[in-house]
Amino acid sequence: MAVDFSGRWVLVSATPVRQGYEQFWLGTEATINQTPSTLSVRRLTPLPQRDARFALDGDESQNEYDVNGQRLIRKSRATWNSNTLLISTDTALPDGQTYLSNILRWSLDADGMLAIPGGPGLGFAWNDEGIAKHTGGMKLTKSAL
Image (cartoon, rainbow, N blue to C red; front, top):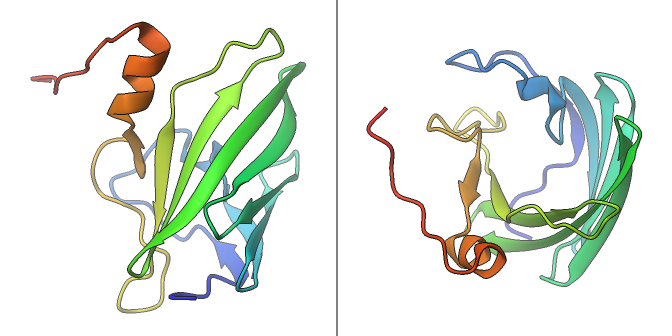
């Protein structure tokens, strides 16, 4: 286990300010329990409380949530890249439609704080293979905006 994320985490600040950031996995307060084989996240705020569990060996993990009256199924794979935990997730709607894959990157900075990436996407990066797979070959290019 490269890094142990176990503990209580509270969002102190995110610079630049990112509207809606509190809605992601950790919210504004969360607890994490990590063993050599699993990572369990309990988002405490904002409500509703949400629990997620990830296998740390690259096996698929499935987490289900009710969001705005819809049941969402999130299938994830968590793997280590040096001291960074990468969590790749596909989200499926009740009709079977699957959202494109994204990758959440977790690492600790020199002060032991959870590092929030400074670039676009709040730590999420599009998976080009997933985009091509689910769109019949579409490719994304960087915007000039």
